[in-house]
Image (cartoon, rainbow, N blue to C red):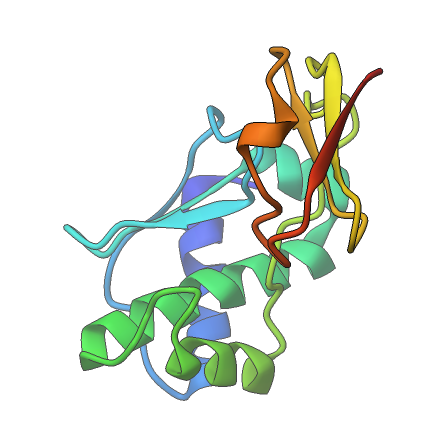
Length: 152
């Protein structure tokens, strides 16, 4: 897929799913590794990962574009465009956009370099660490329970 085809695709999705035109620039960015797309507040452009399109396919990429268009349209309208905002969550659910990009095979995750794992003794939540630390000095971020440290 080339850049003009991507631009037409984003414009089509915007009109079809949002009922509003996309009047800015959409482009590919081959440096994106862990995210399928990005929206820029400064100039309202959207960047899409060609690797995600190639590996995950058009259907998943369609949902990733809807996610970025949610940021775009809400920002243009002056509403809550952050992931945490209710406006964003509602619009994303209405148009069927993806909340998170599925991971690509072969991309390094945060767990790969971890040598230790902190585990909450109450809720069982895990946090992966590269460096050894004293678990008695910290508490679980979710339930404030005590932590235990073990080597992987």
